[in-house]
Image (tube, rainbow, N blue to C red; front, side, top):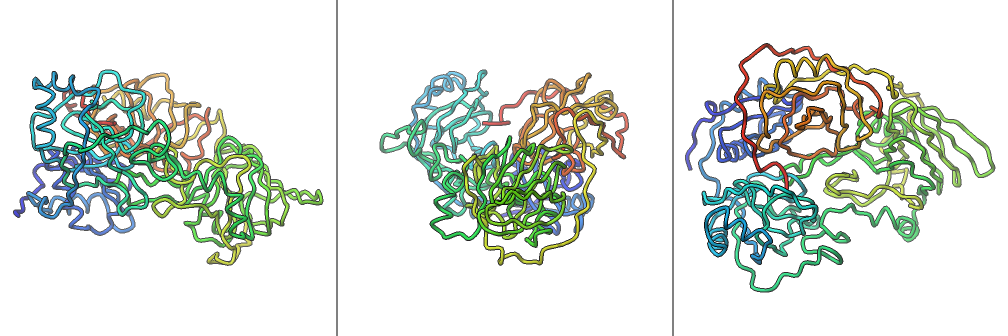
Length: 567
């Protein structure tokens, strides 16, 4: 085991105020850097997101800085091989994929030779992304470099073994995808009851072998191979607690619960998310407006991390089953409590108020801002996934969206850590459709993929939040698209909440908390105020500013299109 310096082959890019993107020369160097960073455990580093040519470092600005981290990373050495300590797994495969013959033609070998060499190669998980449990496996046989399908499939069955670019992978859930299918397996790639839940984590050595028995595709119905309990594809939300909460609360003898009479446009259970699982392809998710949720929890005496309700657009009607204390924060709008005897109360936004058995709590439509938060003393009681009650709408982790008729259990109010706060919380000035909001951004990590005119357009043009917006991202529209200096896509790399990713049409997408963990479109900048971004309604107009304007520079040459950006 030898150690060599990394500094000469590394390039550093600012990804946000709390993220540093480190670019390596190739995949092998990236895997070595990730291993070195894990071993070094640098002060202030909170998470690592490895990808094809980069490692995204999340850090706590109160403990370190991008400059300090860059200097520390330059001083690291890396081990040439970590396979002696890596976990090893064997995947049994039935090599009958729809694209096996086409792959053989592309590689100028026979289908039998593809299978033989796929089994003979040693594969190692380089990074995870696309979906929880989806690992990008790099092999030691240079034969395997296969283009993606020109027309992606709308549905790839769970357990499909596939090739794309220099990688092989196994689909942990049924999903759209453009990789070339060469076989299928019944191996369970994602299982929340297993530690770790992902079978493929970075560094894992994978060998493929011929399956000894027939594999049955049951992904279209019933319990699929690789599926989580109660899921057809291994990653659907844990809906049991959200749809049968009435029976569960009754059977548990719950003293307090909330009955959902009207959920509005979207009602989700959220806490502060599940950071720390990026290596398994899982983003943190959590409340879109974190300050609103933590304020509501503080008002009712809960810990900041306690689960509450996030309402998109308002229009929610709940009935209290028992006595409790609640608070509403976030977007402005009416708050009405109607008692069983017809008495009507109107609590203020940002203050704690009592709920009695039979009271109906109505959150009117959002007037300024778009997301309203409800905390109840004790906290919402739902099944957790990876230690969090957060609903991740893209990955399908956590409780499902709350429907009409659901009864949500509430933890015993006596478990709250603090006293109820009688003070009125300070309200924020939030926008409404048609108004213009100025937001500061941090340029990077890929501003060099855009011309100086493109960056000037980003910072001078008015952008409108479109109706094609959700927790995954806000699609923005501007009169002039952002001009690229390079075409094509990047090798897949980590992305952050608040990133402004730019697809080929030049119209940016502002990533929300449920954004993809990795992606191949360049990110020109990231917004600094994530909580404000969570409260931007469709129709609001944006102006971006930054204190760090780029200087004219020589732009790099056009990059080739890559094949490893998604499933």
